[in-house]
Length: 449
RNA sequence: GCCCUGGUAGUAUAGUCCGGUCUAGUAUAAGCGGCUGUCGCCCGCUCGACCCGGGUUCAAAUCCCGGCCAGGGCGCCA
Image (cartoon, rainbow, N blue to C red):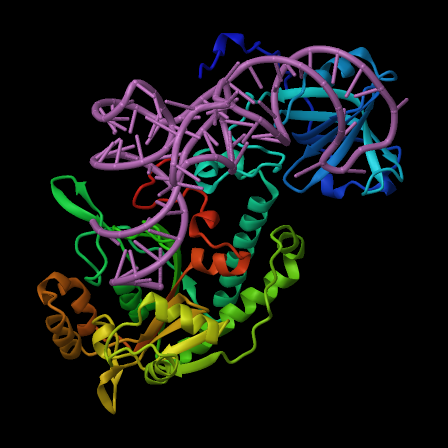
């Protein structure tokens, strides 16, 4: 299908000139009857009834109806109005008119319209939402897709999550840190790393801030970091990304119990502040968040195996819990719960073992239904112990020599956790595919846009 | 990486099982025209598509093979 570039009439655009927005659409109301306003935004809908024409203008905050009685307005306004299409970027200077004929009790009658930017039709997405596009199509035209209410709601909620989290952790004495994204070696083994040319050497993209944040408890005691990390896994699921945002904390003089309490308080605060401050967004998303009750349920790995066994799913002790078993668990516990006392061998080298049982770890996972939301634990802080654990897991201690230095400088006993921001957002927005809650997702197949 | 399912106008779908009246239906978007209060406005007309390559056949959107892409699941993980 040809694009007919030459057929698109080069439209004369107006300049913004001295116009500045006087109010967001959400701040206008019937009380402003008779006042002149300048509103800036995008055409969302056009309803042309002949002698009267309605434009719905959208800005970041909401929408407003522009009413044009075509026989009463100046020709310039009519010509401008007739040239508009959905998604054009326009400015309207007009008078607020109180009326019972719109849902919000007022409309704006224009005195002047400026066309600031055009949109080339047909657009790759149906912006009226009458025929919603598939996720793949939407991601290919992502910035346009992000103009839709649902998406603006998701990112408003994300913003609320992050600001709540930063406020809460600051209040608890944590300071925000940035650890390197470019690293020399694997931090944990396990997950696959992306490699890159670093001048004349090979470097990697960090998969986690784990070792740095542990080291930093030595100087700052309580640290947290929010940032992207990278995993070159071949996974094809609706909850994995190659680039994801990790929320990490690490706390000196603490054990898993301390950081589990911190974590459940974080989740509690996030859920309650979203319920309080993002009511409109939750309505747009048709989603409800049940207020969580503290403390969250805690199950040992053994208790979970027993429970699964009763459901006819048998897992030998020491094995990881497969996805299908997690789905069963999600039905049994349809909210937040912790799984503790994991077998030591299923946890990374930096997780401490139980004092009374070397086979069992002081590591935990925070689950939400069937999905792993966070994991953490008490860390090993003895150099001898951590070296032994590295060897057991087939990791050469010499690759970790800079990390091991910290153990010679008085590394305190410490504990911490990490949670995936996107998974948290899936839970808070009711989305079933992690790509829905990422602006420009990166996965095994997708590198653009 | 493996398994399953799918790929039809800008978007979303019907048709595919059982090959032929498919000149490919519908909705929406887009274009033109009409309409004085819409709020997914409405009405009429118009434009626009069978993923790519190969095969079977008198005949392929439809069956077969390969490729690419997508969705879901698994393993792995957050």
